[in-house]
Image (cartoon, rainbow, N blue to C red; front, side, top):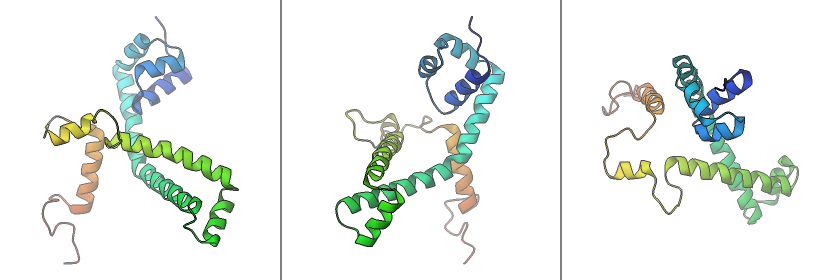
Amino acid sequence: MTKIKGGVKKEVVQGLASGKSQLALSKRTGVSQQAISRFANKSEIKSLIERETGKLYQKLPDMIEEINRDIETSYRISKSVAGELTKEETKELTERFEGINSMLKFKESIYKVKSDVLKALGVYPSQSPSIFVQNVFSDNKAAIIDPGVQRMIGAHVKELFGDNPLDENSGNENE
């Protein structure tokens, strides 16, 4: 029976909290998938995983803002390459990235981020439609979104619109 210790324990907890599979973590850490499964099913470990997941949910708005900035910068790089920016805008962009090669590497890395975001949203072009999109269109009432994300979205909706988001006057103090 393999015992998971120290840094590997932290890596497994953080990996499970961020959605990595037990098999992927097994390959990465060298610990068997069965040992990871036993480890993950302990109540104290479940609490640690839940706490780590909570930390990720708290970072979500900042992560989305950062992704949006990076995508906007990637868009500007595309416009620069296509000759659609002024010489001054292109010069500023090139200096910011210390040359065209680092600009193109950045653009390449953002392509992966955009792909991952589109896959997570279920709108990335593929041969098989996402389960999320299938559930939405089939009006499936089963949980199609992680309960933690659902709670976070609910809290933000309440913050913006009060307790009744369907009330047109809710959250509108100017009237």
